[in-house]
Image 1 (tube, rainbow, N blue to C red):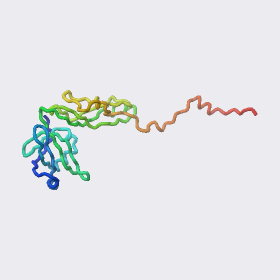
Image 2: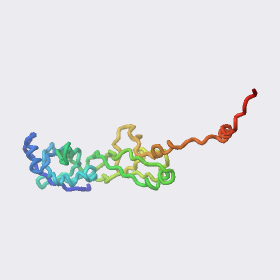
Image 3: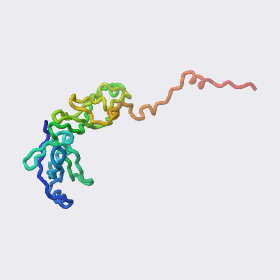
Amino acid sequence: MRITFQVGADARHDQGKGASRRLRRAGKVPAVLYGGDGEPRNITLDHQQLLTLIGNEKFYSSIININVDAQGQPAIVRDVQMHPAKNAVVHVDLQRVLENEKLKIRLPLHFKGEAVSPGVKTQGGIVSHLIQDVEVSCLPKDLPEYLELDLSGMSLNDTLHLSDVPLPAEAAAAAAEGATAVPAAGAAAPEGATAGKKEEPKKEEAKKEAAPKKEGKK
């Protein structure tokens, strides 16, 4: 399997809110490592390293190696809890990855070809990206970095759906039944583009309005 990030960690033995506050003051973040064939394990991560990682979309969609007391464990990020008022990580949930066991993970969806699509280039439309990621199921060795949807064939009022997103042969969408009909991208005219246009009167009606009215007999 492909390992994208190396993250150092230490075993954590103290529990409770007080112990967690002391860890955070020392520049550490409490985390839990669970799943796979092992028991849940409480660990600590370096806060400064986490701050450099959480802004990278790959951190949430790749396999990372957690080095706990010099022992490596492949894992994926399940949840990152942030402080509500400042740029600080409060807690991290990590799930173990086993080489022969399928995993479910959300992959970022990238869009290409928007600028050259007929709906944008010649018809003056605007493309909206309606979803940002897709949950897939696959073995760790088959995990792609991201998924890509080609918009170059879109015309005005076209819509592409989740079912239009190409997947690697070894991966499958983990969406619920019927969810593949969810719109992924749509091309539409800019809002209000036709609102200011007035209908031109028909020629015959214009002539009637322009003709002088005949006076009636006295």
